[in-house]
Image (cartoon, rainbow, N blue to C red; front, side, top):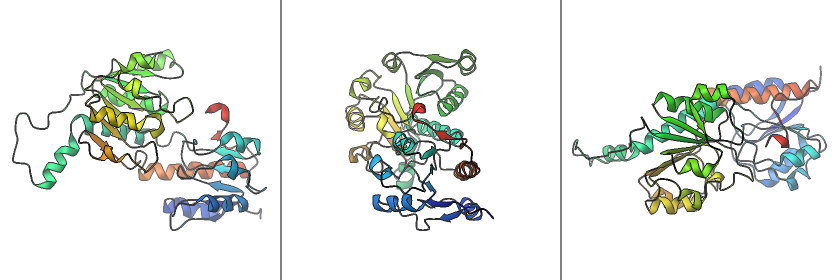
Length: 327
C-alpha cells in the first residue's frame, strides 16, 4: 500500500470533510479551531507534504524560506490566495491550489442581502422591534430606497460579479460594470450590462456599488477618498470581496459626513479589527465575513481541496493550481 501524504489542516473544517480527509490522508487536524500563530504555521510546513491553510493564515516569503523539504503543495481552503506569497512558493517548488467557483452563488446572495438591508433599512427596523420602541406604522417611518430602476455598478465582473448582475436584473436594476477586461459580447448581452473603461465615470453615475474584485497591489484602496467623492450622496456601497479594496477610514469619513448614503460590509481592511466609528452608524450593516458561509459551500470547498491533493498525489497538476500570472 502506497504511503499516504502527511497533510496538516490549520483550522477546523466541516465534520464530513475532516472525516473523509482522515480516510484519504495521514492528516493532522485542528480540533480546537484555534488560529495558528507564525511559529505554529512554520512548524506545520516543516513536517507536512501538504498544508491546508485558510484566509486567516498569512504565509509570507520568510515563512516559506523555513518550510521543510517535503512540503510540495499548499492546498488553500478558499478561493482567495492574497494571504499566500504565491511567487515565492513557486520559486521554491511548492505548488499552490485554491477552491474557485463553489461559493459563487452564496456570495452573490449575501451581496444582494446586504444591498437590501442597507437600502431598505432592515437592521434599523429590527432594532426598533426588538427594543420595544415601535409604536405603530407611520407614513414617513423607515423610508428607504427602491431598487427597481436604479443603476448597479459592479467592480470586478468575474463569476461572483456576473452572478450578482443576474440577481440585480431580476430586481429591475440597470447593470454597469468595470473590469480589467471587457466581457465577451454574448455574456454582456445576456447580462444586459454596460461596460465602463473608466471606473471614475461609472462611479459618478451609479446608485449602488457592489465590489467583487480580488485584493492585489492594483486594487488596494481602489475605492479611495477621491473616488468616494465622485459618488452620489445617496449611493450605497456593498463589499463582499476583500476589505483592502476600500480605504476604510475614507469611507467612514464619507458616511459620517453624509457624502455616502450607506454601506454593507462583510469584509474589512484590517481583518477583524474594524474601525469602531463604523459600528456607530445607523446606515451601515456589518457582517463577520459570512458571505460564503453555507453548509453546502463549505463542504464543496473541502471536496475541492481533497481533489487537488489527490490529483497531486497521483503525480498530476492540481486542477485548481494557482500561478502568479493569474493574480
